[in-house]
Picture: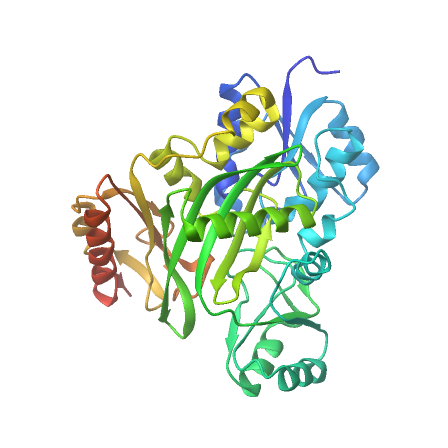
Length: 416
C-alpha cells in the first residue's frame, strides 16, 4: 500500500496536462489512467509522462483496473478529457471516493441522452433526434420545419464532425460524411445527432462542483466567423464579469443542467446560447475547459478551473469558504483563434511580430510550427494558433482583438 497522497487523472491530455504540476505543488503525486492502449494522435503531443509516478492502462476489465489503481490508494479520480469521463465515474464510485456516480454517466457523455435527460427534468432544450439511417433523419427534418439544423457525432470532442445544414441535401451529406467513420476520439460513429439550430450568442460557463455545490469559475461570450465553408467557426472568446443580466441567467440555467445530469463533483465546461426564449444548452462536458483557456483565465483572474478543481479534491474546506465570493477580473482577456485559409507546409508567420507588438498581446499557443503540415481551419483541431490578449482597459483590448482579426488572413501565413 502506498504511503504517498495520490490523485489519479484519467486521460490527462490537452488542458488537463496542467493538473499534475498543481497537485504536486499541494504535496500530492499523480497516477495516470489511460482509457485505451494508445493515446489519440491529436492529443499525444500534450501528454507529459514525466508528471506521473506511474500509469494504469485500462484494457476493458473494470475490476482489473480498479485493483491496479487501488494499490496506489488515491484520494481522488478525475477525468482529464471527454474520453476519461465515464471511466473516472466508474473508478471513483468503485473506490468509494468523491464521485458523480455511474447512474447518469452515459448522459454526461452521449449528447442525445444528455438533452433528453435534462428535458425530462423540466429544463428547456433544443429539438433533436438520434438517427441511425437517412430516412429517419430526413423525415424528422421535414416534419420539424427547423430550416437550419446542426448535425454532429453523439460522442466526440471539440468541433469534430459538426455540420450546419440548411436543406435536405446538406442534411443527407452530413449524415453520409459521419456515419461509419471514426471520431477524433477514435470512436465509431454509427448514428448522428441532429438538433435545431439555436439563434443567439454562444457562451461558455465553466464551473467546479463540490458535493453538489456549484461554483462559477469563469464565463465567456464567443465570437464566430463564417469562413472556409464553415458557418459559425469559433473566432474567439471574451472573459466576462461574473455578474450581469446575461451571466445570471446563464449561471442559473447551467446549475439546473448540472443537477439534472448528476454533476456533483469536479469541473464542467458548458456551452450554451442565450436565445430569445432564454438559455438553451449546446452541450456540457464533465471535465476541464479545453484549448488552454483556463491558463488565460488564471492570468486574468488569479485562478481558474484548474486551481479550483485541485482545491475541491485536496482542500474542500478552503473551497467551501472561498466559494462564497464571486470571481473578480483583474485584467480583461480575449482568446483569438487564428484561421488558416489553406493547407500545405507552413514556412512562416510573416505578420506574427505585428501581433506580438500589440499592447494587449500576452502570449500565443502555437499549434502549427514552421515546417509542420497546416490544414484549412474548420474546427478545434485545426486552429494553427491561439492568441491570448489581456489588458486592464476593455477599449484597448477590443482594439487589439480587431487588429488581430485584421492581420489574420492569407498574408498571415506563408504556405507551400
